[in-house]
Length: 185
Image (cartoon, rainbow, N blue to C red; front, side, top):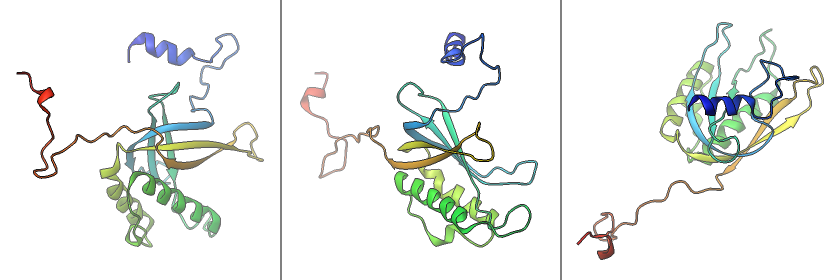
C-alpha cells in the first residue's frame, strides 16, 4: 500500500474538523466476504488467553481490512465463578461454525479439559485452512453497561464467491488437461 492509498483509507468517512484522531477502525456492521487469515493462541500481559481468528475482507469497499475474533474457552470467570453456560456454548459453536465453513471437521479431541491445550490443538487444526474463504456477518447488539460500545456478534456462511477454480484434469492420467488450442504451434 502506498502513501496515497493510506491517506484515502485513513480519511474515508472521517471528518478532520469533527473526527477524533483515534477513531475506531472497526469494520462497520454488515455482510462481508472474508478469508480466514492467521489462527493463533495469544497470551496477553494480563494472563488472559484465547483463540484468535484473523478475518480479512476480500471484496467490496472494505477489502483488505481485518476483523479479529478473540474467543475464550474459559469455564471460570476472572473471579473464579463458573462462566455462564450460554457463553461457553456460544464460543464453542462459533469455533465449530468457522471450522465447518472452511472445511475443518470438529473433533472432541480438540476440546480437552485443559484450556491451553485446547487452544493449541485448535490452532494446529486450523492451520491447513488458513486462506479459505467464507461469508461473515457482523451484527450489532446493545451493550446496556456501555451504550457507546455495542457488542459485535458474528454469523458465518459458505462464501458467496468462488475464488478457487481448479484446473481441468485428464480423467485417465490426472494431468492438467491441455487442448490443441492452448499449444503455441
